[in-house]
Amino acid sequence: MRGFSVAMSHIIFFVATLIALSIAVSAISVSLRGLSYAMAQKTETSAQQIATIVKVVEGDGNLDQNLLWVYVKNLGETTIDVNSVDIFVNGRYVGACNGVDVSCADEVLDYLLTPGELMEVNIRYPLAPGAYRIRVSTQYGVYTDYEVVVG
Image (cartoon, rainbow, N blue to C red; front, side, top):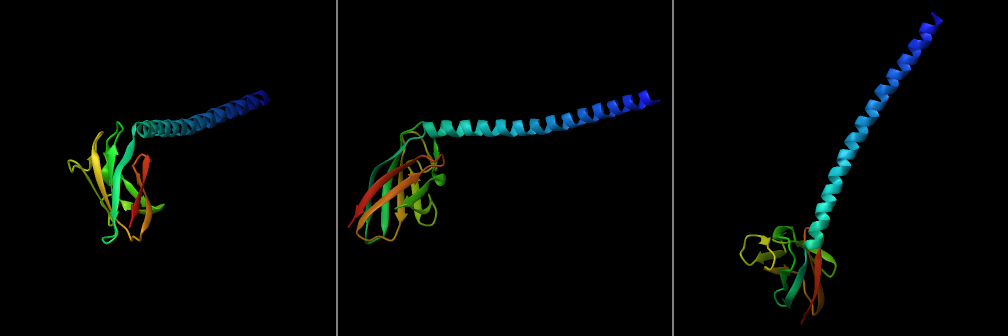
């Protein structure tokens, strides 16, 4: 009888070990799927960043109207969602395109800045005579800076 109880305890430990291993493998499998998805997203985002190039080609301001404007050209290979473009003046966030203080219009007015297309950005901002650094940032984190001197 003693041999039977030793054998049974070994079988119970073996089955418990199998159950614990299957739970661990399931948990690791879920983690690996999440990691795989995150890596695929990061790869796609990196590819979009590499293919995105924007440049301010001209800009100016009007002191009396508290208005700055720049023309942004898409020199890259990606299409940029105009409504996802963020505007900064002197390092301060002013808003997204077509928000309260910023209006943006691409050439065909479809809110998509396609490769080679130009976009006008108008910014309402309290102005005094001086220089203003305007940053236009895309949804991919790619940006361009331009300095406008007013007054």
